[in-house]
Length: 37
Image (cartoon, rainbow, N blue to C red; front, side):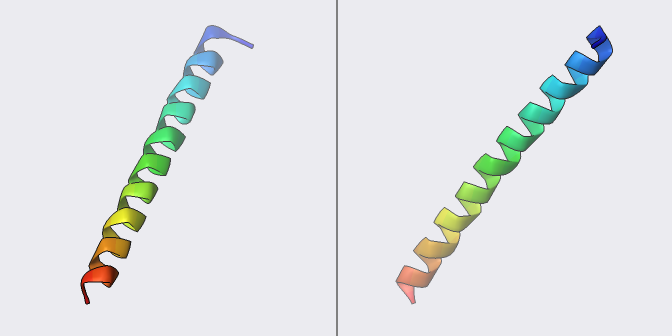
């Protein structure tokens, strides 16, 4: 594995981590909106 490939993997891990956080945040907002109605 080259250094460039390792960097690409790190970027992908960060993107997946961010997507996961955003997904949890959206579910949290969605559930709080449902509770209000």
